[in-house]
Structure formats: C-alpha cells, structure tokens
Image (cartoon, rainbow, N blue to C red; front, side, top):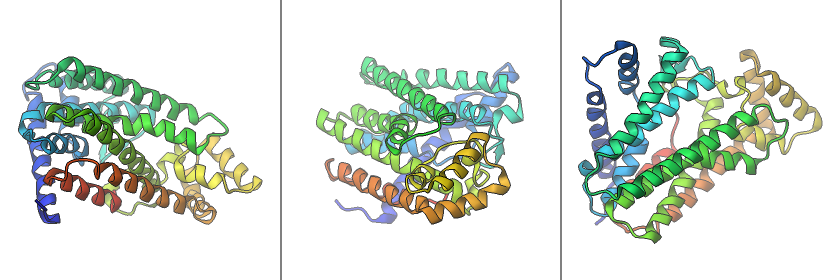
Length: 330
C-alpha cells in the first residue's frame, strides 16, 4: 500500500509526539535532590528532532510491531543521545545547545557530568522495560554501540591536535561518533519487530550511510546555516579546531600557502572574525561543494539499503525521512 508524503509526515509526527509526551514523565517533578534532578529535567524538557527514537519505532513497525510496545527502547536511545550531548558540550566548551545555555553553563561542569551519568544509566533501565525482548542481545548491541561511539569521539578529539587527517580517517571517526547510534536505532527496532538477519544487515547499512550524510551535512551547516533554529554560532567547529569534512576536502586541493593558512588557525583555533574568510576560502577551494556532493552520495546509498527492506508504509515513511534530511537547514 502506497502512502502519500502527507501520510508519511503525519506518521513521523505521531511518533515524535509519543516521545515528546513520555520524556517529561521519566523524572518526577518532586524527585530529590534538586541538585541532580533539576538539570536532568532541564535536559529532558529540551527541544529536538527526536530522529533516533522515530527511526527505531519505524523499524519496529516495518515488521508489524506497534510503536507503543517499543516506546521504552525509543526513549532509551533518546535519553542516551541526550547524555552524549551533555558531555559533548563540556568537551567542546559549548555555551549553547538549541538556543538554551548548556548544562555546564547553566549549572557547572561537575553537575553536568553527574547529569550525563544519570541519563546514561536511565537509558539502560529503559531498555530493560521492553516486553518480549531478547535482552541479552539487546544489551550486547547497545554496549557495542557505546564502544564505537566513544571510539569515534576519541578520534574526533585526537584529530584536533593532529597536523594531517585524511577524509578516510574522518569517515572512520563519523562511523563511530554519529553512525553507530543510528545503526543501533534501526537494528534494534528491526530486532524487536522480528526482522531476519539479512534485513538487520540492510538496516545497519541504512544507519551507517544516514549517519555519514547527517554528520557531513552538520559540518556544512556549521558554516552555512541561516535558520535561527540552528542554535549554535556559525563556525563553531572551526573555533574548536575541528577538522570537518569541508575543511579536509578543501585541504586536499589546497596550495601549500592555503594549507598553511588553515593549519595555523586550526592549531590555535579560529577567531570569530576569521570565520567569514575561512568560509570564502573553503568555497573557492571546493570544500563546501564536495560536502554537498558527499551528502547526496550517502543519502543515495541509504536509499539503496532501504530498497532491500519490505516495501510497507513504514519503509515509505523512512524514505520521506531521508528526503527531509536532504532538505535540512538546522
């Protein structure tokens, strides 16, 4: 049965509402001590795309399992994602997240670390609430994702102090830092729905390519976003010394002088007033266009993986989801 774009959008919106309605109730308003639970509630009350829990529920529905029955797993991946953002903001010295002060700014660094620790523990507790789940395999899949994500984050930080990083090394980092959780969402939803091993592999490929497209687009938007919903300063990655896809692609084409210009500023970290010139140079060197082409390529590969899955309404909603990612502006 074919579904229209409007029906797919409505299905995704319904799944988002399930998550939005459930998140605030995970920690009661009266829970003490306030020093811990106020920051936790602050995080859970924040806005977000809820992409990861929606992907999990769509994958479960693809195999006939109702979204409501896997909601604890969907909440688990969203809470885990929230944990990573709290700790990432500390590592990146970020002052804002989605238009609000980050937890370590609103409170302090120690409070943010503790808040993140609690959220990670809560994600495991939520996994245990899924009925009729092969819990040993679920936990093994989840922990392997944690390992890969931490490996990717470690590489991301290490790249800041390395003089030379290749695009291939960057993609290895992204496969851990970004793709691992998206792969887990799709595979876990499929597993809970009863998908076979071949379909689980296709879901893994879908998540990997989706993660690559999402991260490269994130790198691109860091330099080009115009929407106030972006919620971060333009050029924040450059100011943190990050070697993003547009930078690495540009450096592959750069003259010695251009390469030195970028490497010196990445080493000491770009100043805000240097970001516009960096963007102009990246445009001239083809770094921004290379990033746009890479996003398109990985989205095509994600669609190819999706084509291997059963052609049912949830798959068509996943296709709509990929189309929305291609048009993302924040």
